[in-house]
Image 1 (cartoon, rainbow, N blue to C red):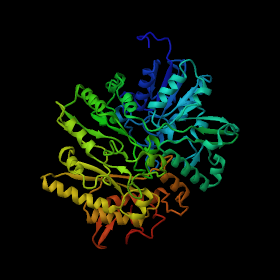
Image 2: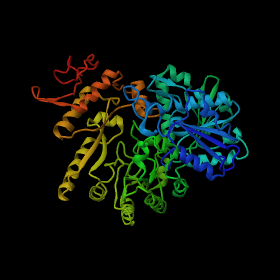
Image 3: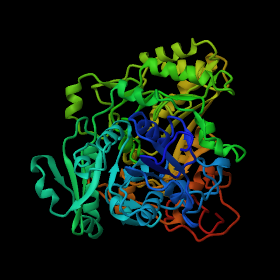
Image 4: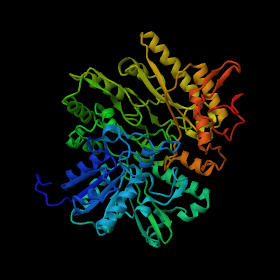
Length: 592
């Protein structure tokens, strides 16, 4: 600040991540966007919240507002495993060290700032604020929590991806923080008096069940989620959502329509340093940065609508794709990086192969209320032509200095039919391991996950083997699977182990036990024990014993005496799982 001749900053951002000035890191994007709008921006990464709070004091108060984000992940997912144990590392911290961010980081940081600077506005955003903007289920506390605006005391919340709303906030506050003006913006939320809803247009206002009603009645919580999810997946939503909380209410204005290519390009084209801040020199690598520094994000959004995933809730269902001009410009910048050796680690996005995809008839998309374009079957209006993506790959590979361009993101195998896309990726863009996500094998579990039938994965496996055999390639197909999803029992996990480990001879490494995260259908089913859309009961493995028992089937061993697969057991003896009726013979009373 001294070098720039600043006496104070206009905006000071606090983030739970180490600072990497790169378009894949949210705080960097928001900082560059605000800077591009003419504001003086300072960023404080991973402030110490346990000492005398000097990190919160050292830059003083900003002229306009503080901005707060937990970082690229929800802080509770970042800090705790599915078994609610503290993680031993943090991919967004130098050296991968854990312990540099607090629980509920957005609320913790905001409360500190409000205590130190009670008259300075605080704007919260990022994925933690975005997905906790309504009453939500919090897995760590096993309870419903109030909207984060209530608990944190923040003045304004911006949700979803911030490229457009950040610029609008910057323009609205240029001459001061005018809350009345800010409340008119799209894609913001704020707290208002209880009678505020009476001043809104009733034709464009949706009243959700109150927070107190949702605490009393799980079905009210489920109904609120269905309304929120439906509104979030509209192409051009217009309704304001209002959730009463005690004598106040949380007001959520409708989001912006999907970004155009020009709007998306404008964020990626900003002058990022594309590197961690020099303050981290000698402190160890930042794992998340090492993973993506030679990768290129080519689109935004996902229309898969998987029940356990927050991508569509945060980024939207409709795809916004970058222009080839912007993508090629980023590749030219990557080529100038001192340690680049000609290999791009990933040309992808939330799903690798949704670039440029959209509905053939936009009018049908405007009327659509489905959460997924692929479930229960692929929408007939979806244009899933992979040729633009293949053409992009070809253009990238033709760039002088690019030896290989790999696809590291997961691929939706229910999209490409007989397209040459799969063979193109296997032959030219795979480093030897192709990632896909069948998630489970049993149809009733897949239905609750909003995933395609397992038969499609079996067909993919055969096609993958045939292509590799024909081209003399010894490549691996790497499937992702999830245990303990609502609807999944031990019997279902035993069936998964039999099909995948036994019959198909996979050795699994990309597996996880479900962590229910806010604003997902899976977390609602986990909490309520039923599908909120149908009201039908759903089995839920709630206890940590039950969850560990299910995950053990991913590492099943052959039980020759029984002629079947049994879950792997650790040396530590634990109580038998509550749901034992479906366990393989001999499982009860054995070590797990």
